[in-house]
Length: 635
Image (tube, rainbow, N blue to C red; front, side, top):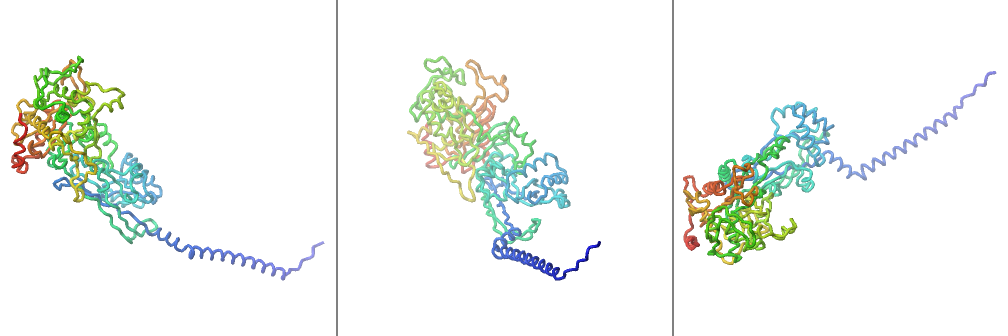
């Protein structure tokens, strides 16, 4: 039996539709209210915040690195300038995949895998967000063209024009001026992140490092409008950077070249100082190197060759080379002996060719094994008599000797503005107890008297000792900067002058140094031939390997690098000092035969004119100066 057909209830259906419509309208109104409320919150309540955020997405503040200050020699010749160069930069945040971008870049430019590793290393170094990282410097026109053609494959890659440090003198000023290099992560942590934003290089050595704050300058800024891809559309505001200060060096490039030529390609160091001002006129450390590759990033191969070279071209012998001063220290020891009362100018010592301490059998040999007989102070300096200075050092004693040598700057840094300078070593009783845990022995005092033993000095320190003698004890720290932006450097920690009980002791030592050159029996009398001025000098020989008690020095039996170092110090004119020079020739063996002629060439280059005559301004002083010279101690 079939079911009855139900009749449709239109009224009920209409009520259901109205209910659904009502519920939908309520939900719609509720959502609309939420949307309106949210819009009101964003557009009205947080209007300032989102307006600023939107503006920051469009407007960026970009740093403008300052132009690094230039460096000149004392004659106005540029030794460090800034050269325009096109560089390739990558902004990691704007590159989809920077490692893939590097792969594409290497492929496009046809670079090596070593270059790829170097690029990746630079990209991983610490940096600020959205800061472009330079990965390749000094692009060629062909490389720029290739990058332009493949720009669509290189997101975040840009070619920018910037100034790059350049050293037109190359290796000639490498050890004095130094060089700049890329900022590493350790340096980035200690630098002012604001002032160095946009800067990728910093001074690493020499003047570049010591005067980094002055040379760098102050950063500038510009507000730029960018598109969605980060491209700059226009500049809205700009604050110009403050360029770094220019520095004029005390070094004379012509004297520097003359000193290098005098050294003749041998390993060694030369320092020339103007006694009256402390200005370093020449600073030569040979062999040297070209600092320019370090600016843009030297290759691993090139750096390894420099680092591993047996000749150590990266080593600054002037400031870091530590050598026994040998007999060059004897004038200072003589002054210590006179001022301490350990000897007098007339006191004599008999030299049989050796010296023996009381109750000791050990013989301390004089370089002249036949001996010089009775020797006074003048003869001891002129002949560089070891026996006399053994005896004098014994009479002075280690405590007073160490104290006096400290007054001359030994065992401490003496320069005003040389970052790499080593303090050297002036041993003492306390030093040996602290470092060796041993007592001081009398024989160790004797060999200090001739500049051997534990004593270690730099060529700069020897030049400063010579300058102090020429200045009669007046301390002026040697310095490389003549002026910074027109202002001379200031010594904030001056050394006290050396005050002697009798100022004539200075003349005694100087007279002995003059006899070294002027007297026919002087150890360096050969360099006096043809001289148009009086030279006060002292030769020295520093042992590299020890010689046994009864053995003689045999050059032929030693390897070249085991032979003695040759040293010579001098100043001239002796009666009106204008230049003091210290020369060290590694393994040169003879101070008077090898180092002294080098000194003479440097003195001639500074004191003589183009015709080979003594310059008028360096002639013997008149009136008061002539009277003082006439009253000097006579032999």
